[in-house]
Structure formats: structure tokens, C-alpha cells
Amino acid sequence: MSQPQFKQMRRAYGFDEVAIVPGGHHTINPELVELSFKLNHLDFALPFVAAAMDGVVDVRLAVEFSQHGGLAVLNLEGVQTRYGDPAPVLAEIAAAPKSAVTALMQKVYSAPIKPELIGERIRQIKAAGGISAVSATPTNTKKFAPIARDAGVDVFVVQSTVTSARHISRSEKGLIFDELVRNMRETPVIVGNTVTFAATKELMETGIAAVLVGVGPGAACTSREVLGIGVPQVTATIDAAAARDTYYRESGRYVPVITDGGITNGGAMCKAFAAGADAVMLGSILAATEEAPGRGHHWGMATPHGELPRGTRVKVAIDTTLRQTLFGPTSRTDGRENLVGALRTAMGTCGARTIRDFQKTEMVIAPAIKTEGKSYQIEQS
Image (tube, rainbow, N blue to C red; front, side, top):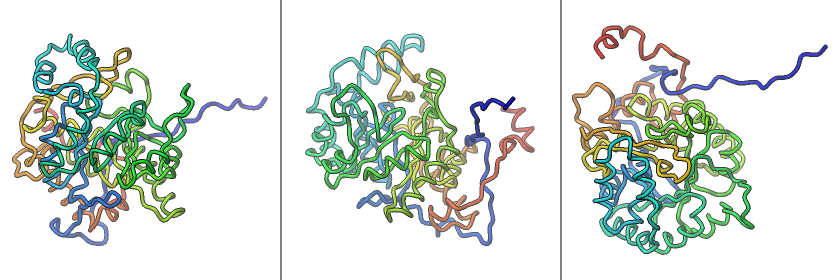
């Protein structure tokens, strides 16, 4: 009797299970490495993207993040476009007891989105000298994208838990990404989120400018618990980067991969780049800064869902500033400040002058990387 064929599974790895192998043929002084990130015609000094979450990005933070050299994304379906003055709403969410906060957010986010506020927020960011990036879900993209384009938005992001180039729905004509790219003219379109080679490559073939990678690793996301879906970030990034490199060989067009979620410290950030990322999207680590609008709290875009919330409000506490998080100086030993210094040092240690060089660095499976020889740290934590 022949043996039945069962579903086969492969091992996938997250940040805590791998390590970067240092010291190849040479090392480089950290100040000599190049960190720039290019998105179509836009050049950024830092390969960092601030997540489109209401506790992370408002007009003020978007402007300041731009001034530091990064890109911050404003959520078009959050409090910034539902309320003319979102400050009292954010304060109410921050003050709510844990047992009542999800119900409160479901109520808060049931207020209608005001289309006029979309253009107003974009113009506020640009008037203050910032690069304006906004995010919408696929459901609202066809309605909001023209408004954002006409207001002069610099980058448009289409974002949902999982996005594919071929979505089947009851709609006679759903969201078609190559049409969206053409309609946005010169405005780069970023799309996410994906975790597989096939979905990533197919999205790149539509003409989009970059892909967000990650399903469920964010500090405030509960999609993995509620839906059981996701792929650990190192494996997801490696697979997406393979799609990028394959597509580049076939087309000559390079589409950056942005690892989104699970980056809580400098070590995880560096591993994302070594796994193949061109940039990283940061959420909870920025929510802890004085400049963030969440008042020391962080929640995901799917948290206020009216029927099936897939997120929770997490308390991150305000214990740093945006400048310190990005550039230091710091006396912390947990890797949550001076991300630029951490990336420069890791790249220099591995002899990588550019992010593209760093992507070629060897990595090893190392489940003991955080515990080996650390008994005193573990006992005292």
C-alpha cells in the first residue's frame, strides 16, 4: 500500500532565532557606511518608515520624522481624518481602562471619515516642510487616492493585513494596482502586506514602488491569535527579498522591500536588513517617544474593527524622544535608542558599505543567541 501524502511544512524563523555573522573579509568604520533609501524619485537619508498608526503618526511627528531623514505615514482611516481636533479623542483612548478600551475605540472609529480632512492633513504636512505619505485600506483606496493625489501627497500606501494582486470579491471591478499606479501619476505607491515569494513578485509586476512585508508580528497586532495566520519576519523578509531580486533580474526594475512589524530594538532592525530588507517600518518603538500622539500607548489599524478586532492597545510609556531613538546619545542597554548608530555599527562590523551589501551578510540559525552566557542578565531581569 502506498504511503499517503500529507501536508508538508518548512521551518520559519523570527528575529530571536537567528544571528548575523560578523567579520567577513574586512570591517568598515561605522561613519563610512551609507544608509540612504530610494523610493522612485524620492531619496531619504534614513531607511526608516514610521507606521501608519494613530498612536505613532500625526502631522507633527510626520514633519519631524521627515526632517530627520525618514518617511512617516499618516493613517487616512483614523482619528486624524474623522475629527477636526483629534487631541481629546487620543487623550480619551489613552485614559480608558484596559477592559473598556476596545469598545471605546470601536465607538470612536465609527464616526465618519471627512474627505476634506484628508487634503487638509496632507497640506499641513507639506506646508511645514515635511514629506507627505498617507495610508488607506484597499476598500477605501479608489475613493481616497484621487483626493490625496490632488492635495499633493508625496507617497500613497495601500495597506491591509494581507494584500494580493488578485483579490476576488463581489465588486464588479475591484482595486487593480496597475490602474492605481497609472492614476497616481508620479506619486509612488507602496502596497502591503505580504509574506510569500509569489504574492510579493506578483505585486511588484503591477508597477508599485515598494512592498510592505509582515503579517501579525507587530506589538499591538493580534491577527496571529485571532486568525492563526502569519510567517515569522526573518523568513518572510528573505522570501520577499528573493522575489525582489528575481523580479529585478527579469525586468531591470528594483522594487524595495520594507519589513513591517516586530522591530522592538536595534538587534531586530539589523537582522531585518541582513535578511534582505531595504527599509524597515517602525511602530511601538516610536510610540514611546515624547513626540508620538498616542500618549505612551500604541494600537494597530485593525484594533477598532467593528466586528472582529485584531489588535489591542499596548502601553509603551513615554521614556525617550524621537531624536534619541534615532540618533542617541543613549545610556540604555536594551537597543531601543540610537537605531542609526546600531545599524551603522552592525554594517561596519560585517564589512558592508551599503544596505545592499549588508543584505548579502551571512546569517545563522541561533535560538540561543539571546541566552548563551547571559545567566546573570536573565536572573536579574
